[in-house]
Image (cartoon, rainbow, N blue to C red; front, side, top):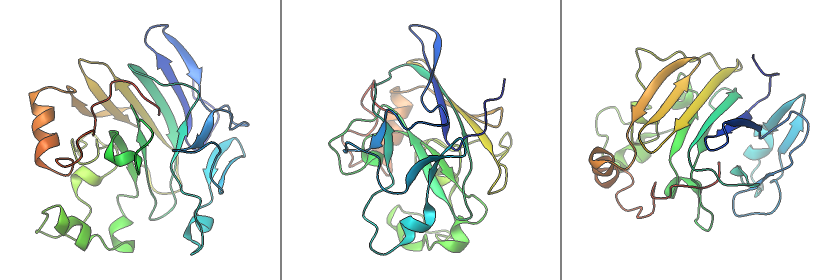
Length: 225
């Protein structure tokens, strides 16, 4: 049954107990806090049954609150995570898992299910220098497949043929299933990514691209979401 609408309304399944846990109930931010912090950063609120970030506040020049938040009540190893989410035009976010604290930012240590405005992001934000730094010399101004919604960011691209992404401002559903034998990314009821974690192919990808100098990227088998 579909849950009440909630931006980044999140539930997860503990494989050992086979029961669903509600991470956001639509009213309380209990359990949620900043990455490397004790409280939610300014701009994050529970409103209208949704966990929201004030994007206009985040654009202010003197904003120092940060946007990375975690469910800090417990860590997860094998899990199934379900999220309902939507983004504003030009929005960029993501869902990290097996996340450990003490690093400068989540991307250097944790895998990410990418959430981004595939259609409009590149026309609003200049990606040229960033993509050139990653070795993308053909059309570096474009958002690349490994950077698009539902991809395992910079590791495994979402299958474009099976992918259904609703326009900005509309709700999407995400499901992440993690086991030691297989990881799956789902978007709006369609499986778009599948890979085996920590196998030879995984390490080859990790050591040959964006994360080759990030020693701890993806190594943890339990962590925060």
